Image (cartoon, rainbow, N blue to C red; front, top):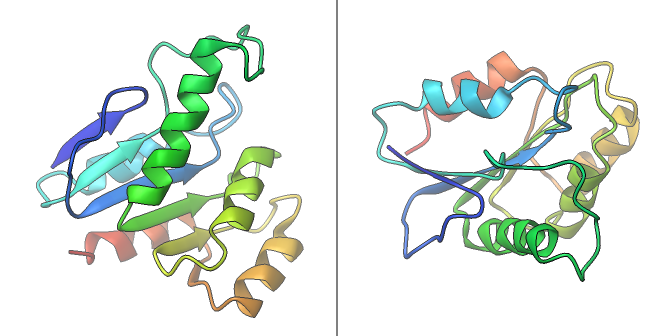
Length: 150
């Protein structure tokens, strides 16, 4: 297993899994770490947007080089991914995750996990049903499912 975290370069990787979804530092569980640990020893490359040096004081503007670098890294990684795991943590609002769902709603690589309690679960459920997006109910079930991917 190989892990590439933002903003490190992504080469011509194969069997890639992008960990899309809730981050909201301090609010969301570090589910990316749990998924990565579960895939240890598998022949996969994890694309993890949870940036080690993230600074929440960065101005969220296209003119802010560090912020733009993060967003562009995520957009590029999403396009390159063979599998996109999109997790909605019920303790967060996750507006960017909802945006990612909208952008990739027709991407066959997408798998969504939206547990009970997420504030817009109804919207996510209806969207997943309409576009035939595989949906998992809990993080534990998601981890079990991805252990079988390869």
